[in-house]
Length: 166
Image (spheres, rainbow, N blue to C red):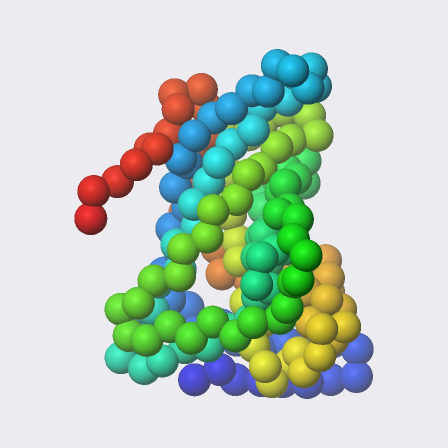
């Protein structure tokens, strides 16, 4: 169960880390020569799995879930999906169910050899409106709070795992 502690300027709650696993997978490495930026782009997939026997709920946006991403390197930039109608959406994971989201990342300078990817985990209790959601998201990113981290993801030119058989 999520424990919530609210204070005047600081919103904290504990993430049920023993009930969730987070896995980051490199799916592809791209260079866009027509753009001529010289930047490398990595397609990553983030998988959040409910390993508990109870349902877990959290929030993200309907088409920009990349806003929930955070990295242990300050020069990594997520390429955010654009969309017409972006609504705050609850995600409900039943036991053993998995939430999967893909994102493109790039770098303002150079990529680290290994990158930890985090998901800012917010729920309805501490984000009752879209404005409150963005404020809490910003504060969590700034303070390093409410984040579920992956194991280090190895980055390189090897191409990743573009497909999987389930």
